[in-house]
Length: 125
Image 1: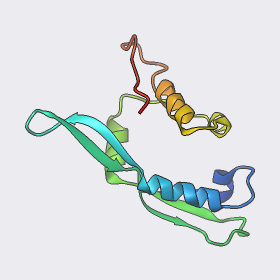
Image 2 (image 1 turned 120 degrees about the horizontal axis):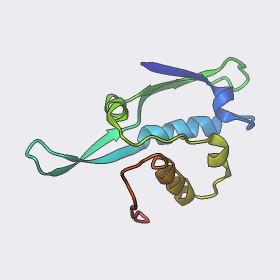
Image 3 (image 1 turned 90 degrees about the vertical axis):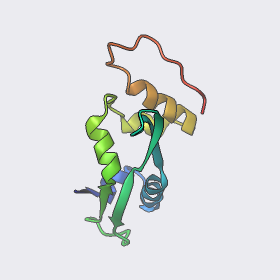
């Protein structure tokens, strides 16, 4: 299923859409790795692409320009069966100055309402 969102909404106060388009390309190149159990019952790693097909308007002046994003089938399956969920606030994300701080925020946000995890250690990787 395609998800359609306006470029204006994605870019926020920034005037051009180039950052949005660059981010979409980065998301298409991003692979999510999830530990799992293989068919033989042994530890395995599942890898899925976040976005598959995307389309964005090339006309920067089009007030109705939109992006059409299609999440990969594997990403959609992982989302449906995930036990970790968190609300990521865009205002907070835009305030970060490093990828490390964003990653740490995402890790902690996903665990806010967990009741069965008392402590967890994260590697810097």
